[in-house]
Length: 412
Image (cartoon, rainbow, N blue to C red; front, side, top):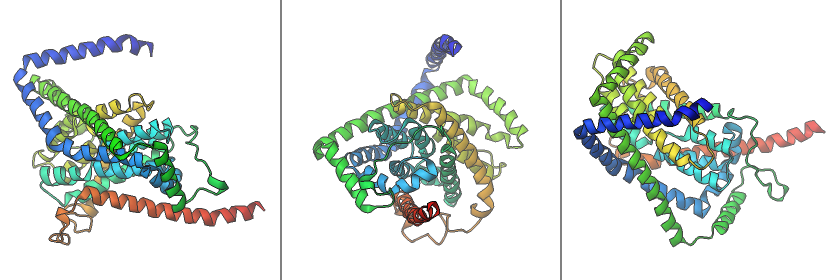
């Protein structure tokens, strides 16, 4: 610890100075990369993330999070060791993508709706790609294969849920968020209690609609500024490192590692690029030489989407700064998520690959011409996740009601 404190500052200063010199040596590529990063932020990230940030902030003020949290509490706690409010974060995050989960988790932490350990579990498995990017950009735009979306979606979101179950063992001894028992009744699925919790939260917030909207827009703009700055910075850094030839050395090193693992060495460039920035890595995985089987390209894309790149990591770290949530559990969870997603693609390929006709293939003939192509996939996924969580919550509530009398009889 003392060694890291002693040498951390000088190493960081030396790294920043080296990168600054590279930008001076290659001003043209640095400028072009900055323009491309700014275009990605303005054309893609801003219109897709800004509305979610504003709406989620207002939903917090109106108490809708408390309403959903009370309904999902019987499901989220036994499975993920997270309060029911985490179900709202999971649904919104799966629909809108990173870094929405960190934003919502930090808000729950500020309102003391979750503990530090619960927040670390929550942000670890809800940091995922949005379905619009996974389907539209990666499957259709990069791979030119809409039927690949089903496999990528199953691998990416399925492995995220597996990570959530694994993360329930994170800090097992930490106390959970205290939940008040109203009128001595057991906590279970109750629409009346959920409505009461929403009404109480709205009264406690007390902000009028106009003030709530104004503060939500200001908060969303501040966060989008940070996100845009990080995208531009990492775009420039990747460009100058590539132009200087430093990335070539990383490629050679990773090629030897992939060869030893019996994997195509041509995947080195996507893995290195995706390690820094998810969009560049996913695009490079689709552009690998034709001699590499499609299943390995898809597995590499799933790995990159789940790791999310250091650019997203920096966004998450900047959002979580000041909330007490630690970055190390998040980084470990990202690595586990990436490995699981890549393995799931390999396991699911015989069943859900593009050459297999199953209902999960978004581009299958059964869905063609049915109007699904124009349906907003983000809203669809949000509704499906919320419906699934509510059904499971209702089911767990019924089981709890049936189980409690049995426990009472056994005690007697």
